[in-house]
Image (cartoon, rainbow, N blue to C red):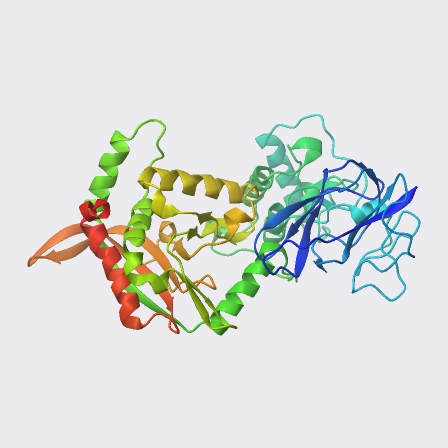
Length: 465
């Protein structure tokens, strides 16, 4: 038997480190070649790493949520044959103490602020489980509103009275809690002990619906004053590490604001005629064609305008001071997911019609929200569109998606009273908020781009000329 050590691979595009998002294996697991072993996140995308060999997992480099550099040891296997190393076991990460090896079946280690645990518990995905013992009863996996109401009543009863304990005892004290990071965050915000919430998913996994039903019934049985105008005093606080996609977003936004001198230009657009055209096209579309939103029309207007504003469809390298101008239009679509803002890319948008652009937007949005978008689908945009109109914003000052030089923001579409030829008329109006890199795009040029987009949207026949 031999030892095979897999180092974190170079994932390209200047990536020097990656965050371990999820471990797909535990210490002691038997794996086969190409079996997924971990999901890692770079500043470009989340990448699935497969096993290069058949073998048994001896050790994992770190817990989920930690960052490793390229060429640092990621995982260690026991394999048949000689393996790829005969050297002494080395530290798996730079943060390890000198002379310490990464955890193996024979040498369990302690994580910071953690009690002693077995290597298999140490290797379990940190974002998915809470290391306790026992199992949730599995007699009924269906939502039962009455059961949730009873649990909420128990919670209120346990905390009521002058001599009641300050906190309620867990409903399942020895339960292994299975749930997602977003559910854990929601529970923290609502001050809910997840051990009190029965789960309806596989193996008792707590789904978001389980938690929301429990919170709703807890509120209905609350002991606040009449009218609900006064509630209990809120106490406590918690500190959490910024990791995963949020860490990547924080780094990129900070760099963009620090390095790029932004200016924003906001203009209102009369979309009355555009909305009539959009409604007509949706009524006449074929069954296989995607429903049109306003976004594909804005993309078409932007595509038509960019040849006259090539410096807005460009990348600027701050270090080399080189500006790369692009003829193809690869439009990034800022998309909100549970993990944070992600920007999938509609490649060669100029070669698609309205329906094709709409279909590609839908496909990419679904891919990023289900964590199935590839690295290529999340990189290479030449200009970005971001939209907060669904939330009712009047105007925004979007941050440029570096190294791009411009970003187009879409705001709320609403009916407003406007003066047309001296008469008051009700029109469907929308504001466009665009931000530009002032090192590359002068104020006059940025305003002209927005005005060119506005002119096409207000006279939509010109979109197809």
